[in-house]
Length: 258
Image (cartoon, rainbow, N blue to C red; front, side, top):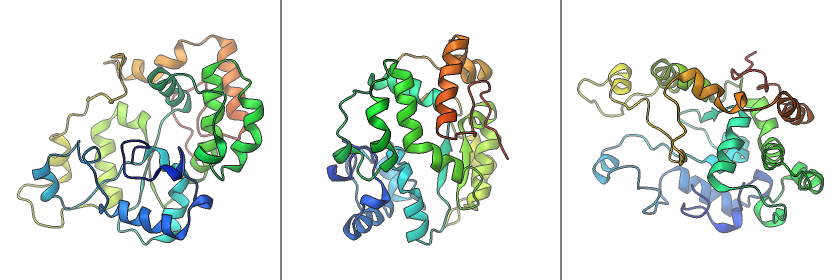
């Protein structure tokens, strides 16, 4: 579901919003989620032989967070969506490192249609000189309300990057348990324990361009915040406060669970 290499149409923009989706768009989204719209890039992470014998399709849609309420309202899903959350400052640090500073001349009507809060605040936000702070505002305007709503919702499987780093084995088994997932066809020797044991639990992200992934789990989680001065931490915390984001803070890497 990549914005340029995936199978979503250009008219959906950078971050599609449910209010901008027509009935035709909803039908197309259903086709995509059902695995009926594919291309070479979307299939590039799965060998053809594995895809042919797969029981379940897992669709990763990083840019589609704002469509989560639509998906939950429109379709009776067999398995809950997995909402993967990471400390927002880590997210924006990764984005700026991988893709550069967000330009001030965004095409809001085309790329962020119906994101009302973003349209209201962008005139102020785009004047911020610090690219990380500007990106953090943008991230909060797009994601903060949604994360606050669904972090404790029974409608999704809420997963925190923090937990995956510290205890990937337990976290992945818990995801399988919450999804109540088992192969549709019998697989000899299959179990959640065996499945997880066969995974590379320390593989790095495709966006780790600088080889910045640290072997020590606590160092990995704290690496971006520890680089900040007290003034910077206070300024970035102010961004969270502006949008009512209490799930994460600049003083702690752990999510605040209710």
